[in-house]
Length: 95
Image (cartoon, rainbow, N blue to C red; front, side):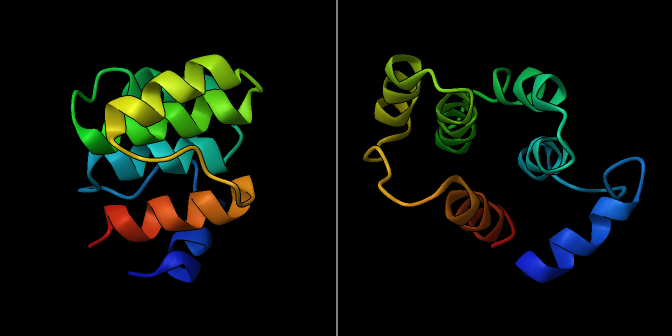
């Protein structure tokens, strides 16, 4: 699956069955449900969960909190757009 395939799933009302929790979290964010995405991400105690958590706080404009989670994920604070970061996250979660 690539990012284009991921975007095609957004017509559904739920993420596809069998998807990992990181992908489900990203799917909810892409559908505009920040809360559902955050609820999943904050319970993922992995580098990927921290990265998604960082992205979500960056998206809401909380750079201080985002910075904390990027550090937890071992990633620099991104300089590219949120859309580019979402694509990067999806591609990372599918490989």
